[in-house]
Length: 296
Image (cartoon, rainbow, N blue to C red; front, side, top):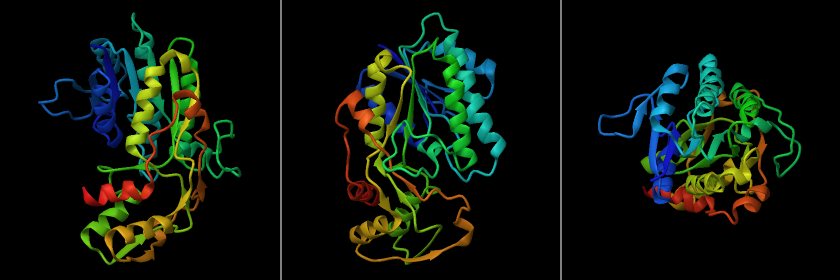
């Protein structure tokens, strides 16, 4: 049985990706800071510790790798930790993988559509120049540039997922926060900037795309792909969908503490390159995803 390594397997995406890769026939290993005793194939490792990463990779001997481990919350307060994890953690992993005698057939690195910032084109394709507007985006773009130093030694593919959601995503993120309020029957909610448009996808589409990119292996190595729906929807539209699902409208108050001074107003991507590589995407309407989250 071939071996897959997912860093950050305890994260929102890692849970779904593990299911997808197991269904594809892999024995799935993962990294986490605090695995449980029952998780035999989940290894406790801090990617910031170079020697520990080398030992973990030598132990697992992965055939394919999907690197998800990161600090992904844009408003995370520890900026130094964000750069250490997102940049140096990735470098430690690539160094360890390149040292293997039998190198993996695919190494998928999760970057972010945040690297585009406030792009003045729509939809955003992979050739649009990056213009990161926050430290999270800068850390991910730095990771992309660093990864190019290893592309002559490893079959690296970079993905730039746009916003996506689903059951199990933390309420730090916008849509889970909104859904949780409706599930509780709350009458009021405090949000940040209401005048934002995002390209929302279902996590199940995202992990299906990741699995298919991994299967493509060296055929797509060295390339970068947007992972997105190709459709922009406003925060107001998402609130309207939830009102229809829950049967009532919620009172929205703008909390100035939640408004970012450098907010990206519109972030809508093109998935044409991704579909050309792996075929039609397993997309779901946002209303269907929200209902799944509400009824879970």
